[in-house]
Length: 497
Image (cartoon, rainbow, N blue to C red; front, side, top):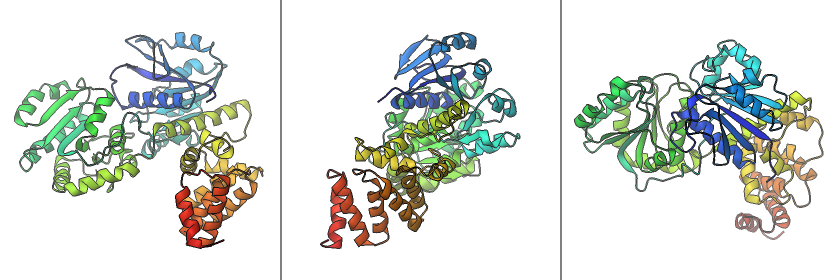
């Protein structure tokens, strides 16, 4: 894979441990984004307060600005690396140093803060320093818009999960009597509400257990009583902070993740990881949580943030292990739709767009998935079929940019193909067929993609003759197509040509 430009990521001023356990969801998300960017071919430099010193981990170069937040030293080092994209996690302060940096080609701030002022300055000031602020939920974007921020610079890119860290595990082997909490031990996270609900549930479910994972430094008055809580409520265990891979092991066995935050949450990364792992979720619907929790399918979202509501919901689920098993089974498809690699592509599409504006090159900038669709020679069918799924997402490449590419009258096939995929997704099959036919007329001799889409759409419309004709075209162009048996079955339904 050819080397992409450099990406420089600035963590906030919290301590970061590349080889250890980190403080919260923002740090975990930033670390996961860095790994995903490495997998896409970027050189990634992460600047942070590193108590254990500089190092390399997972392909990322970690540079230390220390507890003094000495950004001036980092700024001098950046002058020697050539052009780079800069990404700040929540705090905007690094861009005060980089605003005149000649080789910084884009400036993105990814906001994980649950307040409009979490980036350290007034939102209007922040947006003057950057190209885009990436919000992780629409709820967070609305919060910042309420401060009269420029909507053109506020975009939404939802967090993802790391498939290498959080593999799927189905209902087999799960202990439905095992509850799990992941988050800082503090009042806003609602741990006291969960402990109260757990105590009430023990009367009906004596074998019920609750494992609590998270930093215990934020609410000393509560932690001082943890021994008392554990003595009164057998099955309650406080584990403190643990590595993500250890959390993953617990999520593969647990019956329910409980996410009882009482105040605004930008996203809720534990919800994402639990759903990806096949673990049912019960969460309070605060902030952006409802945008991540697949309510009714992968768990339940509660809009009454009380111990009574939580107890009632958990009891109902615990009495119905068949429903919990069904939730876990559905998570295999519904809970694993958004790996961090997709998130990284979306974020870099904004960085590339900002760099294009900065250099005066206003042609649409294609993400890697669309580049492969447009030049499919030598790309495996499996990769291209996954790229079709990404192409359906406007965040990867906006509808406005797609319409611009179509207006340019390019002779290439890919804009018509992508337009067809998006029309197909919303059920506009007649229009999708028109777009796919235009793509078929412009594609290369070995490009099977528009014909495969046509075969699917015609089959969906019970137009077997047209579906069969396009299926034959796919197999002529790609004799080793991975879904060959399905296409042959479709061809046989139409009879002899």
